[in-house]
Image 1 (cartoon, helix red, strand yellow):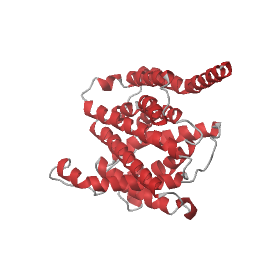
Image 2 (tube, rainbow, N blue to C red):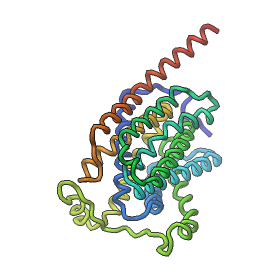
Image 3 (spheres, rainbow, N blue to C red):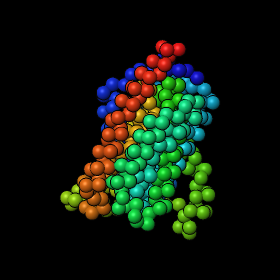
Image 4 (cartoon, rainbow, N blue to C red):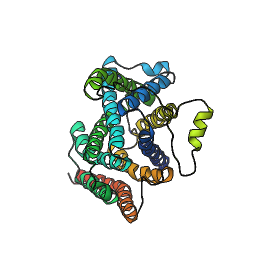
Length: 333
């Protein structure tokens, strides 16, 4: 297994902008998942197969020079990614975009516990505290939704968050062992393989008498200003579901997943997941743009958004102070 770098370069301002840009795109995936007519499992299967095929043509021959053991590790990690996406889309379909995203927002809290276990380090209390502050901010934003009967959607969102924290921590250890595109294509393949193996069980116990629904439909997508997207899809003779699946696979997967893995070479896993907690904020803003009455932004939204943003921006300060304190202790010793 070849290491690509022996030292970890420092992050630049552009890296933080890239991270926020892909988080905005991820915020849009919940909206796409809500629009799609096919179930979550079938959606993720299409998404991962297309992404894996596209990336297979991008990866260079010398980038495949990794050990068989590492290949199987990446395939297994991909299965975790697939389970994360299935629970994510299922949460959006069972409940709504807000409930789905508030569940996912707990990823930083789980990372604060999972990452130290994997790396055999002490749990940092300020990371746990920031994770709890973020959950409090999201509670303020979603307070009205939490009063409704959407427990299942919230549970699925939290499970999705635990899986996200798990595979992000694993990928944090893999980033220097292979190129981002190589990691992504193998993990997308692992996700697809995992879902295919799961299909018989899924078809028997979860789909009822209807069976697996792989039919892409030409559903109508409503926007505030007419139905221009639906008209555009009709003009190019594709179903709406097909267009959305390709957006999910190419833009929301191939691009964002590869970039996020590349950024993990310079950003910590916790900093990445902490920024991803802005996904609910971006997601609600996007939902307000694309939907008429599905999402509302009131004073609670702005208060919660300020709390979340403050937590994200304060993390580098806490991290810097923590490192300074460690250096002082080392000098004293």
